Amino acid sequence: MIKIAPSILSADFLKLAGEVKSIETSGADLVHLDIMDGNFVPNITFGPMIVRQIRPLTKLPFDAHLMVDDPIRYAPLFAEAGCEMITLHAETERHLHRSLQFLKDLGVKAGVALNPHTPADFLPYVGDLCDLVLVMSVNPGFGGQKYIESSTEKIRKISDIRKKYGFGYEISVDGGVNDKTLAAVVSAGADILVMGSYFFGKPEPERGELVRKSKLQSC
Image (cartoon, rainbow, N blue to C red):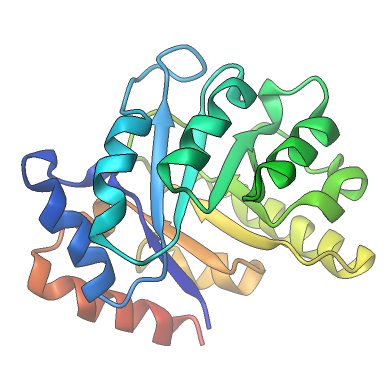
């Protein structure tokens, strides 16, 4: 069964506690945290203090997607704040293998994210350390963008690499996932669908139905 990961980047921060709680009550599977520093991407969001404050509001796992320069510097802070998974960008790392091992040594699941222009050719060399491979299907930094069609082929290639080498990572897709793109993304091999404005753009009573329909559509 496909997993749904609402991103609180698109939540109403004036009602953040209720928004986080609605993720769990909707039947979604995990909470996606878009962490941006204004350097690696042209936007600034929030840090470990906010994560620590919202951690008691849900039992769902947190995935901290670190769209920041020098993510290894900040990874321990997000682990301490309660994130079960930390995803860093391949583009930030000179020594990706070492960085992924560092995350594993922290006791969290290790994820690697790929920007739209980044090929997946390195995965055979680090895939055994990855619990998650996150495909950015938009350029990172802002929510509400249109799905980049070439992402479908990249998802398929990452799925093929997983099968060929017997890796156990899940494939997550972030950006422009909605009722029009969901089927192609899932058929290409995605396991986790990150939803921002598509999820939080709905009134809270409708979010459970959205999650249910998305999971049925992916079957």
